[in-house]
Length: 237
Image 1 (cartoon, rainbow, N blue to C red):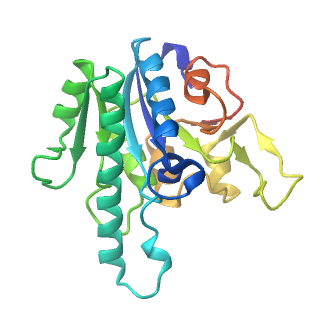
Image 2 (cartoon, rainbow, N blue to C red):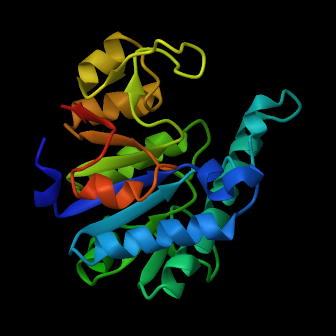
């Protein structure tokens, strides 16, 4: 893996739940403003940043047996559009230029995704958002993260999660769970560790896309991760 201080372009994955803070749903503005402040600090180092956000602060429809999966996933896609528009505006409020891309026409809310348009925006100094998932059901925002990171030729995926790295078992259930400082994508697959979903893991493995996993709720976690002084896990290729 390239040293993070030498990276030119990254894709940051944020969970939707993280935007809600202690409220667990919707948006918690102080939480999002802190994320915006950190992204601005990182952007000022010259790093190009693309962002994918999950929709879990609004929608977990797939856990319900009362709705057909395709329509449930479509609602989830729209939840990610709302999240990206909101966080985009928070970034603008701290002085950053942003663009939101979607894989489907979304009126004047966002631009239609193409690799060329995304790369041009990054080179022009924009922080860009990939909203709306892949545009298809049965694919998670984990898959969107891997797909878009590969398409824009990112140096790595920064995976901001509710826990502070990759463990050999769930630390919420097992107090003796071991955290890895570094682990390969092949080991993640072999041990069935739920870093990201299976489709996303295989895509990263096949395309040699490393991940850096850290806890978003730790103080200054995004900045510390980019500075190389983080407490998470390197997932290597």
